[in-house]
Length: 87
Image (tube, rainbow, N blue to C red; front, top):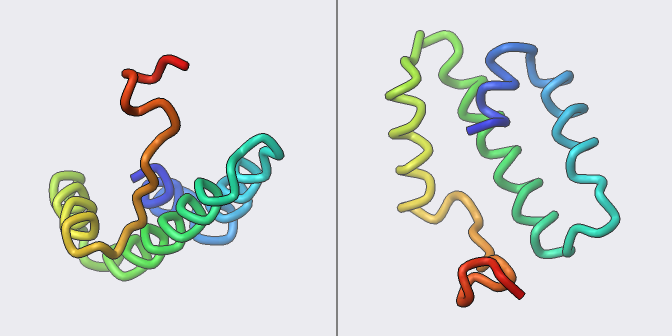
């Protein structure tokens, strides 16, 4: 959703710069980076398509949920998810 709203507010060029800077963390796992980069692009694409349609935040959230359900967004199981986030 963050990439969607960044694009809505600033346009795709600035949104991509912000998002790419965020993903350039050398400590980030490669699978997580791949997931984030893919999901950012899906959200930016949706944002561009919806910008002219005056989509409400609620409708944007529903589209996000649809994308998860339809496996358009990648999901990686977080490290330590079985322990509630604790190592």
